[in-house]
Figure (cartoon, rainbow, N blue to C red):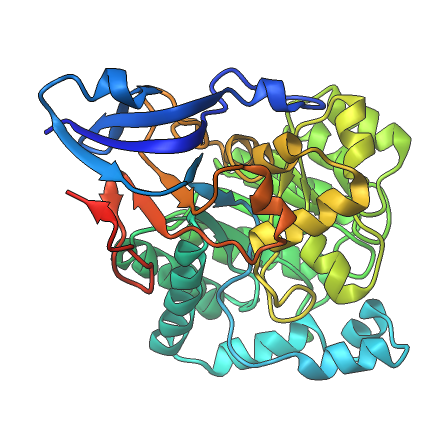
Length: 415
């Protein structure tokens, strides 16, 4: 059955918004007093509410001011974990570096210990809770990585948990195999990468077609990572890389290997930015990690001005980015890097979709999924201005209004 929802004070469709480079308000295709016509979870038309409501269809009228955005997309998270790394945060604030803590067996390896001891059911419960919170924030598509198992049994346990929660939740979860996060204590690095290729990656393929690696000297250098990643490509994996967080090299490798995205980029140079701009590899900024580690932000302004594709994600994880607030972190990055609202909101909608290789969401246009979030305001600029405190009160996933998992459906939503 065809359904019409509106009127919305503003609908940001992003219908003709460019994929690359800087953006202004005029480029985000705003419809005033608009509505969305959809059927079976697919958008049919987006236009003026009065015009579209003349047809004999089911009309669900929204009372009060609302701004409608495409469902938000978080394209880089580590949301399967147990335990806490509050001690790491305190140690970093006392002068220890991320690299020192990792070298001493803390950091990522501490979380690995917690995850290895956790049952799949416990991890599933914890992930479901985090996904529910994202849904409340209007985030309807979420990338989730493994990488806290670092052996066959536990990496596969994490990927299966992601799959099970994806089946059970109303959000779409996109899983990524991150066996090459760091090297566990029981292996040397080259030996560990051979183990991943021979024992783990072939079995991970049943759960995901995506793979990631942490390309840094403390994890896996460019020289070590390149042959490993080339073998993963031969096995049929698409790539995304942790790149240029503390030192450069990873983003160039990502472009060379035609990766979907290069994520972090805090240490990216002007030369690297031009390399990214000349490619279709999405540059993913992770401001939550910069906040958690007290380090510089991704040079988002320079990346956009160079002509790159910029996305923003939470990096939600227990160590460097425990906050998980996509809009709040995007607002902070926008203030620090002088991003327009058009640039920041594009970075968490259709440009983030490109980082995941999905083309049926992120824009409110005919043929796309009816994934959407309505914020109770008359002006889209309020969403970033309020730094994550303005939450959507109506969220749709594939046309279904989410009225459970903590999502608040206002009584003035009339059928």
